[in-house]
Image 1 (cartoon, rainbow, N blue to C red):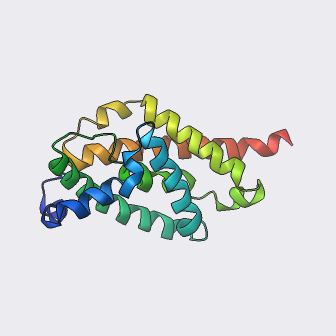
Image 2: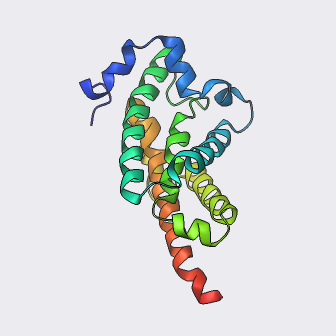
Image 3: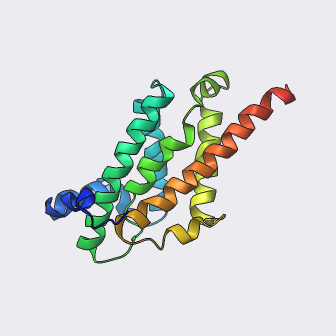
Length: 173
């Protein structure tokens, strides 16, 4: 999928200030230390407010729509910033984090919410920072796709780990 395709080119016609504010989540992406972590925390809030009570299918549909929007916005923001995947673009983390918790609403309720959210957040950050299992190669894709797809893969890896942990927890009490 080419980020310069008509599917994503729509974002290039939006005002630069608008695209850049969306991509950085306003001032959140402009923090000096750990903008990706800040974007991930914002993603936890997005999950808690919007995704938590949705069905798994609804979660997946909304994540797909947000991911496609993020690819276009991140592509246009890279163009305006004249940088490839700058740290201040945190929309990619923001839309990827809810994917970490797909299908885990019952476990989140059963285990008190915060322990599961914290575990998902930490797993996502580990996979996003260290980019194992070929995730680092995904960043080499062009434009907004490269910006977003590595975070999506990190979220999928964290999701898999959380599902394994959720399956194992009943064995320990």
